Length: 71
Image 1 (cartoon, rainbow, N blue to C red):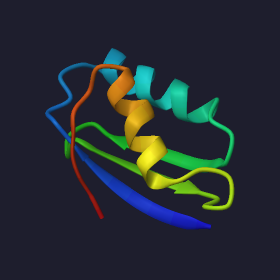
Image 2 (image 1 turned 45 degrees about the horizontal axis):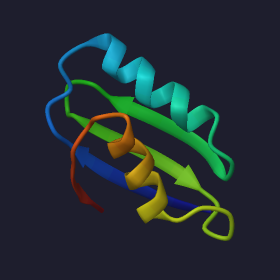
Image 3 (image 1 turned 90 degrees about the vertical axis):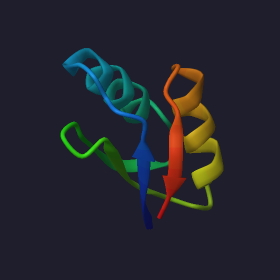
């Protein structure tokens, strides 16, 4: 398992958090996720043999959010 933190543009509302969390919970290969509203970060633990960090970033961006960086 790998854990990455995605630095987001400012998350402005709880529904933004729910939208991202819901998508990640339905994503195959994602073991655990946490959206840190006040820090505008998304921490994701995932199986790299199933999904890549790049694909997770693309999926977040498809929801209309900008990912500023990945650590």
